[in-house]
Image 1 (tube, rainbow, N blue to C red):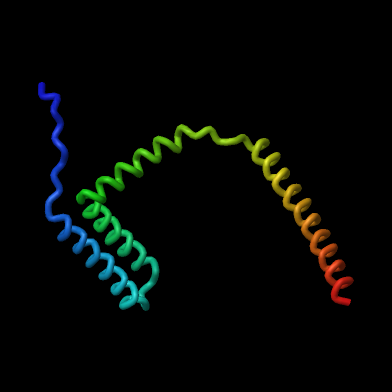
Image 2: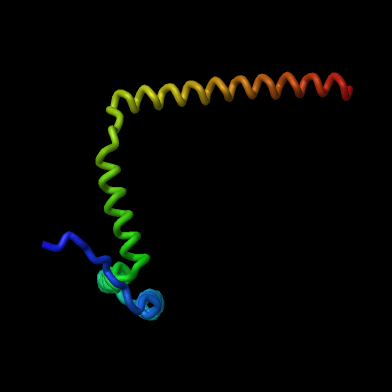
Length: 122
């Protein structure tokens, strides 16, 4: 059993990215050229072209790196401990109260400084 794993070799990345760019440009042009057609026809066609473009892009070095990053980020999001609905409501209430208090403090400070400036300027 061979424990050595070989890194995938990516060839012709420039050609693949050029093909992706051509697909995207063609989709944009086709969407505007066939603008009189219903969205029910254009959206599936655009999704199909986007799927092909993503499939080609993932087979490049940078695309494979991005795909790996996305998979790792999904794993990390699953590790997050999300707050309960009660904690969310309490935190939101605290934020609203602090914002209102700061608004009143800033309004009072502005009024005081405006009154002082009017006394000085006459």
